[in-house]
Length: 295
Image (cartoon, rainbow, N blue to C red):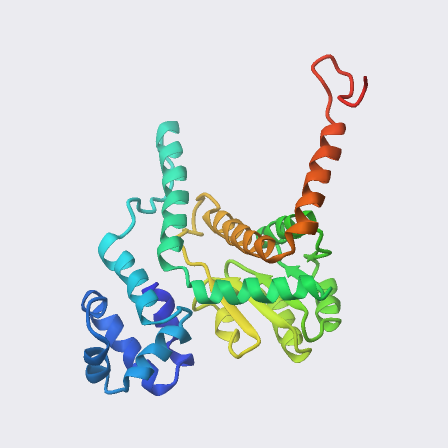
């Protein structure tokens, strides 16, 4: 949470930057200070303190302090540990699982609910209005994009996963106001995805960015059209380590999908999902090798 706020300082107004610097200097004290003291020590007004909390993705000062307290006081019961060359199998099992759990809990404590709510709202509006939803990713992030397309497809939403650089450029060029471009990148350095972001912005689409805070893609994600869902983790890319970033991105996609599903009309969504399950059961085979649909 603090790393993400530190990375966002250059994009904040000068007054809100002063609030951010006080927070970074004294995070534990900040979590318990009354708003008047925060404003006085930052040399800003009380409304500016609240605006700062909303600028970095939280509902207000109360929501911000709750998440901050969870970060600086409770912490996370697991720490990231790199896999070493001489690890035993039992060590690998523990490290892989602990790293995944630590990443998910750290995101839970730092997640900006206001940004997630904006993303869900934009995606749900696009679904209801029959607008385009495009998921962009390359390499490992392309796998996450394909998973997102599959999940939205099950909701009856005609979304697309675009993983080829040339097709991404063509797809982004065809976007328009009301459409959603969801750009997924662990490093936030892919030239193709940076280009997609710029094109989608020029076309007036809403852009949801899932990447590490402080990455080039995150720094580029500024303005009312952009919604940044920062996903930070301590994964070591210099040696083999579990793909924590992919698990984290998949979880964020699950959150978005669940939120959108709850906002779609249940009278059409639930019967469709039930019919899909019935039809899938018809394709299964019994232990005897015969189709379950055979009398």
